[in-house]
Length: 133
Image (cartoon, rainbow, N blue to C red):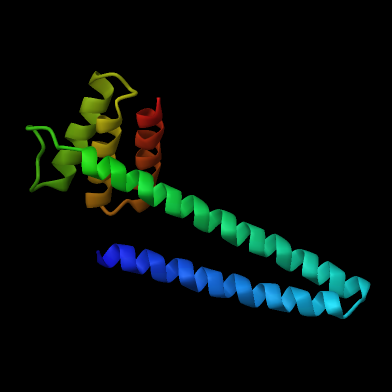
């Protein structure tokens, strides 16, 4: 529940940020000069990127949450040693079909336990893509 409140707070902060930037862009447009229009256009691009990135991250979080709800660790999962779990997850991925979302999600959890967030996100994305197929 805490994470949902945190996400809602971040979305509201992003909305306030977009409103503020929109107000600034409107001020530049009202200046009625080429420089004002150029600055307003740049701000609109920044707004579009902000909305796009926020939307993408929310969709990623929702998809990862759905996978987490459906995932059940295999009986051979090694809970105490993150390094051993990582090796087991990697071996399982190499020995089985490369497109099983459960194997990719297990690898993502192992990366997360090792504090390799970038690799964990990439493995989670692979799991989401494999789940969609």
